[in-house]
Image (cartoon, rainbow over all chains, first blue to last red; front, top):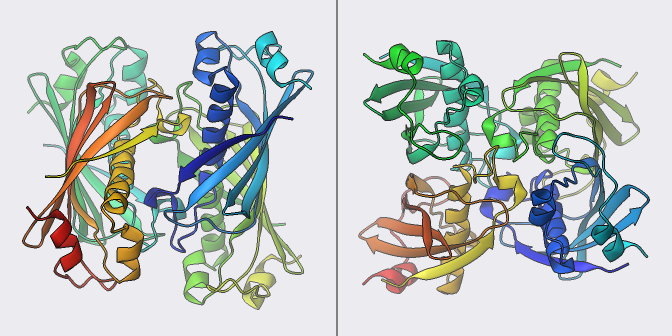
Length: 129
Length: 129
Length: 129
Length: 129
C-alpha cells in the first residue's frame, strides 16, 4: 500500500490552554493529508467533486499518543485502500520520529444528492492492490 | 437603533495557550450574534439565502479590550443599520458588565452568482430608522 | 447511567461546501456537551483544572449518520462512566428525533505535568454505578 | 519595510456553504504569516513567549476583496513596523496575482501577567526603519 507524506506546521489557532493541539484539529490534519494524498496520486478531490463524486467521512477514529504543540512541524503519513465500495484511509501523525496520533477514516462515495455511487474506476485503479 | 442580545459560552476549542479566546473566534461570535439578530427580527439568514440573497462580509474590524476565558458566559449586543445599499452591524461583547471586545462588519448584498443586489424591502423596513 | 442533554445551534462557521457540518466540528459539540455534563453534575471542568486535574482525550470515535446543516438546533445526549481509572463518555447527536452522529471519547486523568492520577473521589462518586 | 511571504493551501475545513473561505479564517492566515515572518526574521514567536514576551492582538481589520476557495494556494505578504511601543503588521492575501483580502493587526507587548512591556531591543532592531 502506497504511503503519502504531508507536512504542516501547528498554528497558534490550534492549541489549547495546555499548549496541546486541541483534539478536533487532528481531524483537520487528516483532511489536509487526504487532500494532499489524492492530489499527489493525480486525482485532486476538487476534481472529483467537479465530476459530482463526493467522499464524505462516515466514520473516524483517532488515538492520541503525545501532544503536538504550537509551531511544531508535524508529518502525516497516510494510505488509502479500497475494498469493494469501502474506502478507508489510515493516518499516523509524527514529529521527529515521535508518534503523536494515529487514526483512520471511512468514506462513502456519493453524488451531490446523497445517492451512493461505486468508487470511480480511476480512483479504484490507483489504490487497489 | 434596536439592539439584540445573544449569549453563548466559550468552549475549550476556542481558547489559546494563555486561556484567552483566540482572536479569530470573536468573529465567530459576531456571526452567531448576527444570525440570532436576523432570526429575532423575523428574517432568518437561512431564509434570505433560500431566496437567493447573500450578505457576505466585505469588511470587519475588532478591538480587543479584555480576554474572554474558557467557560465564560459572554453576551454579544448587536445592532444593524442600512444606509442605501450599505449594511453595517455593530457588536459589543461583554461578560458581567466588562467590555471584552467591540467591532463591526460591513456587508454586501448579492445573489449566489455574485451580482450586487439592493437590500430586500423587508430587510430594509425592519432596520431603517 | 445518567444522561445529560446539551442543545446548541450550528453556526455558519461550522458548515462546509455541501452545507454539512464539517466532520471535525462534531468533536467540538462533544466537548461542549462534556463541559455541560460536568457542570450540570456539579463538577465544572474548569474547577477540576483549577485543582490540577486534567482529563485529556486519549481516544475518540465518531460515526456520521445524517448531516447537520447551518442553523440546525441540535441536541447532544451524553453519559459518563468510570471503570477503575478508565473514563468514558458516550454521545448521540440528534435533531428532532433524527440521529445525526454518535461517538465516544476515552479520557486519561492526569496532573498538569502529565502524571497519571486516579480519578478524584468526587468525580467517581458522581458517575460510578 | 521588509516584506515576507507565506504560502498555504486552503483546507476543506475553512470553506463555507458558498465554497468561500469563512471570514474568520483569514485571521488564521494572518497569524500563520505572522509566525512565519518572525521565524524568517530570526525571532520565532515561540522563543519570544519562552522569554515571557507576548504580543497579543489588540485590534484587527480585514477587507475582503475576492473569495478564496477550497484547495487554493494563497500567499500572504506581510510587513511589521514598530513605532515607539506600537507594533503593527500589514497583510495582503493573494492568489495568482489577484488580491483576495488585506488587513492589519496591532499588537501590545506584555508579560504573561498582562503587564505592558517595551518591545524588546532585538525585535525593535529587526523592524525599525
